[in-house]
Image 1: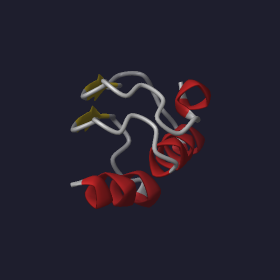
Image 2: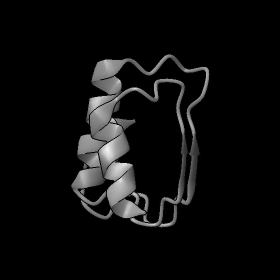
Image 3: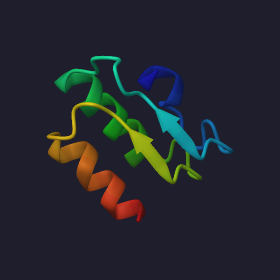
Length: 65
């Protein structure tokens, strides 16, 4: 998923992403955070993951509001 989102402007209309119960680990959360930081899913307003203790993912979500 992170690889697919890895390009700036990828998934421009994605507003909600539900990844609960998918066991996204530390590396997966870091990869998602990097993709979002690079501009992937620019319309994303809601993200649900089970691993909420990832500072990188939390920080990029907070930056986006």
